[in-house]
Length: 216
Image 1: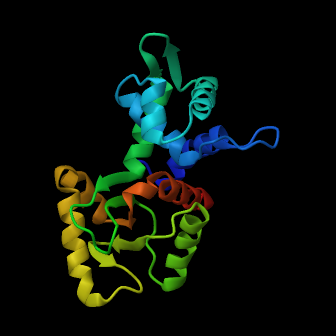
Image 2 (image 1 turned 30 degrees about the horizontal axis):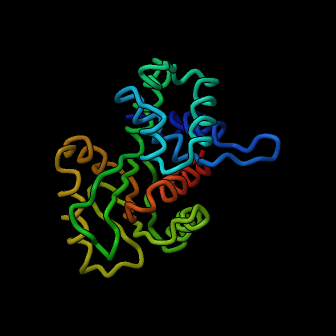
């Protein structure tokens, strides 16, 4: 599994693709780039698929695909759509190992139905560290989240009632059940977890990416 230092340049690739050009911002963010590469690496994807699942317009998808091609991450075909190159598959694989996203099998609080785990990132131990991450989430439009971390198999959630920590642990264990070995290995060291609503996936993920970029 990549360390944060090893994955920083990959996050910068996402940032470069999503950056404004000629003072014009594209209709997508770093998270849209992350998700597009991830999905395309799994199987060739059409523009329609990306429009529907990224929830962005046709013009934005065309711009996104063009920029992915400029970076050598995808190839396109009139018949099969966008296909990941070896470089694109590598970036998708490495990013996915560092930012894992799961469907939460329980809602620790209302509307928190997705769980992101970031292995090997120092966890928040004080409220000020939670606020630092939350600031990045809020700036990206992710104004509803539950943030915590783990270190040496101990779960930490500053600001959360200690009686609720065990429920959180059970929720995380159940949510990552099919990927348990990989996550258990990560939890044995350190990392951060964030619960957030599914309907704010791109916003919350963009905030997470911005936070990680700030650590580079």
